[in-house]
Image (cartoon, rainbow, N blue to C red; front, top):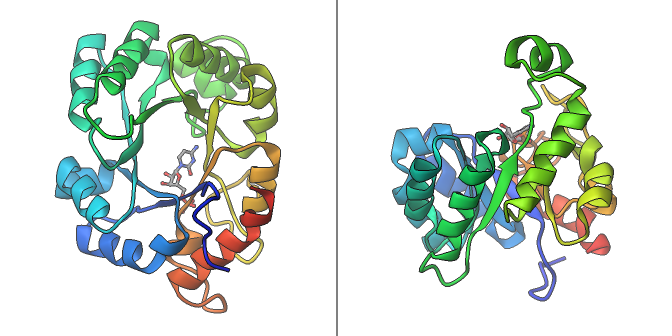
Length: 246
Ligand code: C5P
């Protein structure tokens, strides 16, 4: 099943690789079935953020820039201006940097000269932070779910377009924040893939049915099990599993 041009494609493939050559190889293999590519600290630190964005764009891919900005509002605003360029579908900031900081990022996106305005997405509580770390180390009282909901509501009030969330958070956030708010969800594993270090997972079709706007999926596509075949085959299988629910 080819990717029909009139359907939205929610599949963001995580390019967790240190070299641009490897990233480009994955893009070339999978672009027919991808809605975009998540690039992050590793690839941007090794190859440079703007060169990576340009290279992926030149191959026809759009970018979810996962650099999780957090600093004073002026600094985040200025950094956001630098990355709000053609080819960037969305970039993200930490919600706990505060509402003025989130608004500064959004303003930079709104003032961007890009042909399509990049979306700005908030990061609430990292999934590596459990209840105990949140309370005792970060110093935030209460449970993780309440903190996620509060930070996501702040993101919406600050004008952000959505948040990153785990599959288990989709329903509550969708209910609280409405149909238009983007929910970008990692922790995705097709039935045929190994869970690896991901614990609370959903399949691509479950996440889309639960209300995810985008699903972030890395190793099942970039390093698929032998029985599945190439990265292109894996991306096609993921596309075919979600397409009926779009
Ligand atoms: O290979 P895998 O599908 O597990 O990759 C998921 C991607 O999403 C990785 O880049 C990972 O860092 C990221 N991510 C995640 N869980 C979060 C936030 C980000 O897996 N809570």
